[in-house]
Amino acid sequence: MGFINHEKVAGKMASRTAKNSFVKGLFLAATLFGLVVLAILIYRIITQGIGYLDGDFFTNFASRRPENAGIKAAIFGSIWLMAVAAPVSIILGVGCAIYLELYAKKNKFTRLIQMNIANLAGVPSIVFGLLGLTVFVRMLEMGRSVLAGGLTMSLLIVPIIVVASQEALRAVSKDIQEASYGLGATKWQTIRRVVLPAAVPGIITGVILALSRAVGETAPLIVIGALSFVAFVPENIWSGFTVMPIQIFNWTSRPQTDFHDVAAAGIVVLLIMLLLMNSIAVLIRNKFSKRY
Amino acid sequence: MISTTNKNKQAEPNNKKLQKPNVFEAKGFNLWYGEDQALKNIDFDIAENNVTAIIGPSGCGKSTFLKSLNRMVELVPTVKMAGEIQYRGKNILSSKFGVEELRTKVGMVFQKPNPFPKSIYENVAYGPRIHGIRDKVTLDQIVETSLKGAAIWDEVKDRLHENAYGLSGGQQQRLCIARCLAIEPDVILMDEPTSALDPISTLKVEELVQQLKQNFSIVIVTHNMQQAARISDKTAFFLSGELVEYNDTDVIFSNPRDNRTEDYITGRFG
Image (tube, rainbow over all chains, first blue to last red; front, top):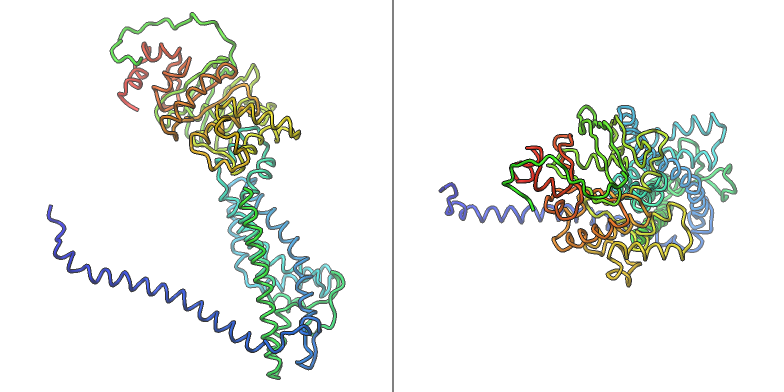
């Protein structure tokens, strides 16, 4: 045919392979950039905060003197907040995802709801703070309590859980669902014994990612009036509270530079807590993947 | 077996065999997917303890008809049905007929092997479990009997608790048949059960179908005309949503009465 001129092809080969290795280098650089920045950040906060990271830091409350300042109230506040937010958001989020994905008819109305949930997942967190302030703190008169804070956090992360769970449910093979129906299983039996076991790893990943986000959120809690100088551990869901990011924010905004090192120690603790949560997620996911 | 030359259409179907009672009787059955009519006015009787094959080109409605028999077709949201399909004298399309009950009596084997991502044992025990059997000894018995019934027991008896995904495609399909036997159905529907299998696995499934017809009524959809000729007692030919011809298998393949049937089985189209 003569459409391919092999001499020309050979002549261009060098520039083609050069381009090939150039883009590979480009993508590698993009990956390394993130890693390097992360390494610098971790190095900085560890060297800064290491002096304050001792047993006292975990058992002391907030203090005016940096050497006495501790993060106990904030750690317990964060745990209490999660204890309220996690069950509420998992029940609402996963339930909503199951309904939308497996029960609801696919029509214009469900598509509209679908779109709105996806949009909600992208709404700035401070807006949820205002919602929480209006509904939970004022209207339902919960005050600046752990309960109000936890419910506000649920509002923030439910859309994320819904979207992640829906994706996990959608990924369950239709073939095995048909197999279950074909044996005379009801819809609930099929969901409970076939769909959910297959979807649980994906759902858990979504839930833990959402909870990690909630642990690190500051803005909505400041709006609903979480405290920043707290010398007590919450006793019940009606107690006032602070959480780790608020405590860290409070320390970094103090004029004394010593407090900035305390903040670095707080960031280390927060990062460790997030790392722990993600490891638990991986563990649970592996356990479920093995069983099914 | 497939005659290409015989033009003498013999009108009389083969009536020498004993008349068996019907498990299914479709009367004026119509089905639409949205606006498209997929099945047109089907009248179709399926006899007990027979292998009934349904052949026809892609898109002719044969799988749709099969899935109507256990109402799996309703999983498609836009589906609409009219007319009547009687299972042992009761109209299964009536809202009074429980779809779960129907599917317990009318089991199904799918085109692609679709075991659950569970152990071999759990796959077979799934059906009995959802129907309320908890007793371990009973379940063990059901699993063994069903796996033996599907001619796969000897291959898997030492690894019942390993994941079913470790089996070959042919073994998976026989496991799916075992899973279907475990609910002790009356009828087994098979939707091109060998189209994803190699020739040797296909042969094993075909032999299995021959054994199973002693105790079950089998309706099998197949693309493969030789398969229909080999294993079925009666054959139905579907074309464009209509039941063109339905007769004893040897009559269909030697003396088809309709020109379209003859064209199809002699490979002139399809």
